[in-house]
Image (cartoon, rainbow, N blue to C red; front, side, top):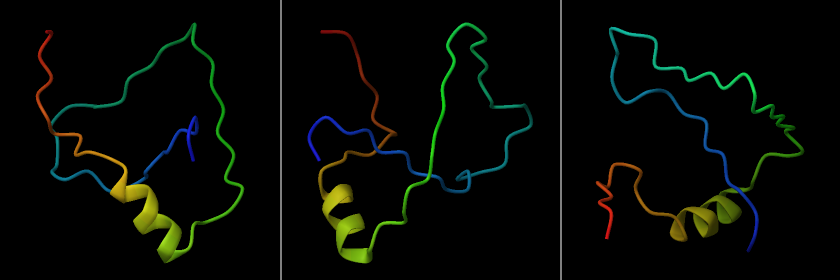
Length: 59
């Protein structure tokens, strides 16, 4: 798992009145779904993550 990126696709937590997409034309990217994780694998991954709603301030 070390060195791997995790992409979680889920519905937005609330409706926005604006387009929340971000577009970076000079930064191409691709994603390929190779398989769906099992419930045990998902629990292991999520145990290693932190909530995305933390406020990070420069130190």
